[in-house]
Amino acid sequence: MLHVSCGWGIYCTEHVRSRALEPEQETQETTREAKPQPRLLRWLFDNRISMRLYVLRTGLISLLPSLALVFILATSGIITEETTPSFEGSAVGLFVMIVIVGPPVETVLMGLVLRILSFITKRRIALAAMSACIWACLHSIAAPAWGLGVIWPFFVFSCSYLVWRERAWWRAIWVTSCVHAFQNVVPAMAAIANQ
Image (cartoon, rainbow, N blue to C red):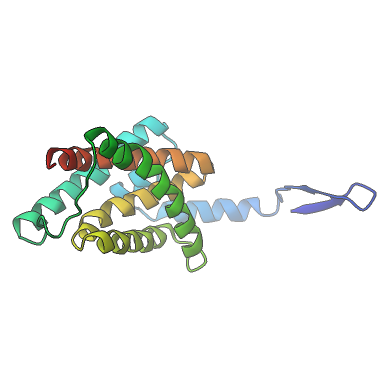
């Protein structure tokens, strides 16, 4: 940053990009690109596509493995009615809370968690993994086995937040909330059906 005096003791701040740093930045970018990432991580950290396509693709990346994990945990007896959360209320109220209200609220809180965790590391995968563990523990407080079922989705949500935060805060909140809502549609329908 360059501070320029505008007179009367007032300082204006201008963002100046140094020409001397550009070759170094290009070298760092090509070094990062030289390391091949697994396709799944490339998809999770790709914010060059439309937000709509990202939500659909990432929603499926979140939902399908978590459904498979919950199925395995349920058939093995780890997840039972006693170890899962019970939701009470009207069908419309549950749907609104689980799909419409819950995701943006948790996304804003997740942004705060990720901000705090960024003081520990700046690596996106490590941040997403730590965030997922924290959210799994928080969900386990409500129901012990619930944390096992949400660890993967919250890893995906954290990746989504981190990559879209690079573009804009509101995009991070919007896209991650939509991915989270996509993930929550099936559990919301299950909660309503089990009433």
